Amino acid sequence: MYYRGGVLRFGKLTMSDADMELIDQSPADPFDFFQDRYNDQLVAGYSKNTRDHGLKVYMPDYYRIAAKQAAQTSAHR
Image (cartoon, rainbow, N blue to C red; front, side, top):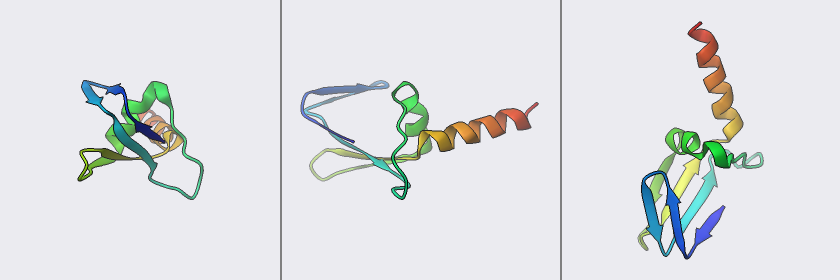
């Protein structure tokens, strides 16, 4: 997913003249992005700034995070 131009707000950050690409960490399957829980995906991934002051964000699929969170919850019971 690529965002370009305009103002983009995510978390406490605001990007004007947006230049941000969300990249699937496992491109062998379709990118499972969940807008309502995007912060979980941001935290589980990593980002790199570009020379043009843009941002490339590498994110795991949401279902992978949800499965990991469910396993951790059941392990703590």
